[in-house]
Length: 278
Image (tube, rainbow, N blue to C red; front, top):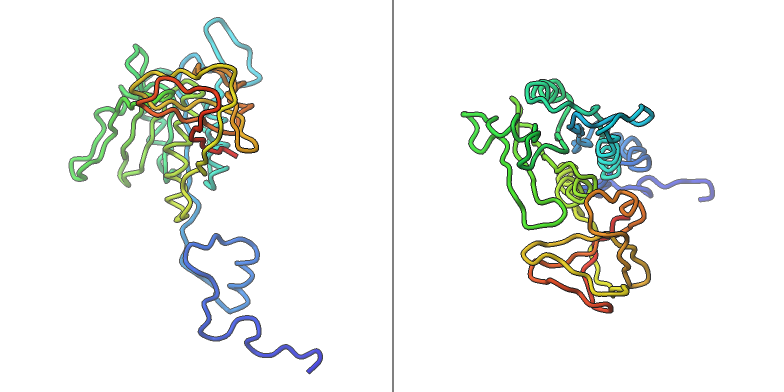
């Protein structure tokens, strides 16, 4: 029987070729074709539209004027959405005008399975997302519309969530500070994307590690704090401070150190919960 391949030696009739929830890559596509299956039922990669707001935002490579900053959120979150498995589209920053924002969102809904906005969700004079979407709803769909809350966490206290448009497209409105925005994405948007994909592991891995620090970490009581950290070999070292604008520290971190709501201080050497980002 040299050079003879027995019928059914690869997959027999009645065998389960692929289980539900399997991510289809090149080998899986090849297997489906090999057993004669031209079509299968799948969950597609969700299409995520990322939109940042703020009249002060300028695109990279452009000249900054007084009172302006570069738009980093839309780039970071679009990359994060792709990393989570989505097909992501980045929209340029929208000025602080509620009518313009509503029109932009309506234009983007045609290609969105999930809409993500950053900025304009607090209680300031230019919180355009809150102004534009706080009263958006659908009388025929219970629970439709966007709700804005203050969560017991730091960073990322102001958050918005709901659904908009004729197809009730889910929308998550994140705060505008870069670190707040990214932490909020990891906690809320990434799990939503991976749930839409039908994946079982929707959350980042969580481990315990020994805190390697020169002094105790302090945290506001009543809020769950997520500090940037560098994790390796069972220990985690804080990176940078707690400021929500410290993008350089975020870029050096591979983990989030979690300080619970009822904890105001964590001593060096203590065991802490760590969310692994990479």
